[in-house]
Length: 409
Image (cartoon, rainbow, N blue to C red; front, top):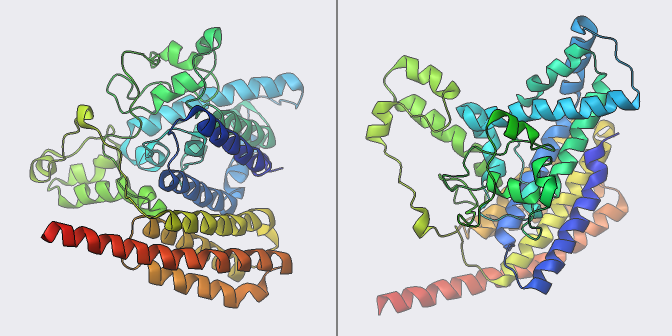
């Protein structure tokens, strides 16, 4: 049973409830461009996980059969122990994801948002291929692979609700569990909070291993990463740190540095590269969130298009095993290109309009391959949303012309 897949409707229900709270309280924790980017990376993560879902299970089975120390059953106490031990392994997986360059290149996706709301929980990596090794000790101990995967899914589901700013500190629970408050500190780029609070469910590990930091009233959290991604493109968000590491590995002269940069402490750069390509120093006292002003019509178009792509991704997740390889490839390609197109649209890229018209035209002529109701749903969204793209681009061009005219005068 895919627990994460079943949890998705509840995730979106909670997001809707938080949006209502946002309206009632008059807060500004959501931005359309940021939230859509978080949701887009979540779709990529889901597609990748579905495509490789047999790999962790197979690996756990092989290790458990060949190297297990104990023969553990599936009683409730075994499930509880597995849940706790999984979180212990998660702590080290998460901590190494912050402390080693190539692991950070994957995990950074989750920290790239400069907002903090429930959509941030879904901003997940599409390149998380190494995390499975941190849970092999559970298979060696003799836990059933089904139990390992199940408690792992429950661990991830728990972490969803802590990505909110609408819940304050929770008293004694702060000492035991990961809460919205201590996880907000984890998502901060303030120096006092960096590399703290790695637990998934239990904050006890951080207290035990010296990585705990309480959220402080004297240091309001500034969310995001010091090397801001400055993009709404989910593909670039997944690739940015890898690209930076490749750049530094290519330009450094020492072969030792070319090879070891991937395994060095996060942020480490070869001295010759640091000198030749210095990075801009971040001054949080002058911090401004990355943003691009666009007409509301374009925002509405992007939202509708995300609904279309999410529906296709959900179909793929539910029925992947019954879809032939060719159709799988087409669906994955269309969804990823579509998510790229939404990002380009939100960034007002010159090619975005043409790309979106071509992509939607391809969808409309391919609907006969899909079940009737799904095809009808996608066709309606496409036909309703395209006028907003057209009118929004016209408004954008008009606004740009006015701005250029004022600058000239």
